[in-house]
Length: 335
Image (cartoon, rainbow, N blue to C red; front, side, top):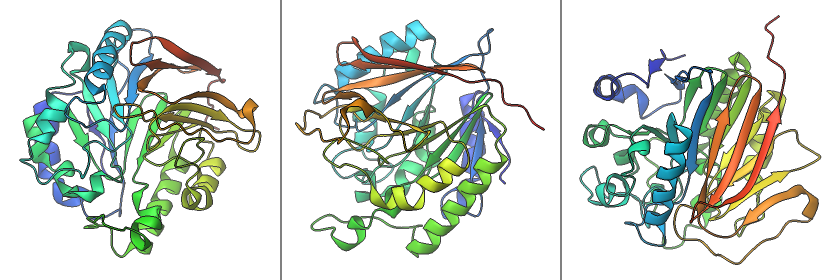
């Protein structure tokens, strides 16, 4: 397993360390990199924001969502921000010098409370551009908040966050791409990539001693939105998550906010994909009692977590609370 890095240390040190190790980070899943982000609050709690499907040069209320993220982030004293992917529309970045990085990210998320580490996964739109540009230490040199890798782990004390690249699982991108061109550099051969990732994820989950386990990927496992459930991830990844006691699965892809809790899985399924363009007008779920929240508009999610309680809140574009939910559990004991 790769050596852990302290992401709460000086941004320049993080950038240099990542630049030196970039060759091992980009092409393979021989090991999943870990980043240490221990809680800094006196009470030992951790707070962060989750946003997805956002990069549109401030349009489609992206700037308004960013402003409210800043307000909530200040109030909560967030430790970091997580992106669930589709970071740059419509077709990712053209390279490390694409002005969209500045226009859709650095100039948009300007609130003081958002000048923290950002942990990002890739979405399908990101794969339509130069995918390795988003993984490059060059971007981290431009804006030290930025950290995007294919898959990695954030060790945050009582919480381990497993960031997973879900794009290669989706058959449609390989068999029915239409006019879209995907950059699969570093992914092919596809089946080996998926097999290695699932094996590494399984081993990492088994070795986790955090009281809470959260997995994040771009594509939903369960969704009432226009894209619906991602069958390839349901079949290949969900059994691993359930077997290893994962508490939460968080995704984007559907441009909405939702919370699904089903009787057939102990995992809570949370979507935060309302970072910009939304209002798709589709909601489809067979059991209304399982759909705790479905909001078809823009917004984001906050998480506050300590050793025994996790609190989730969903906000709309004006910062109004749409839905809040909490879960408690006893401290994990290592036998």
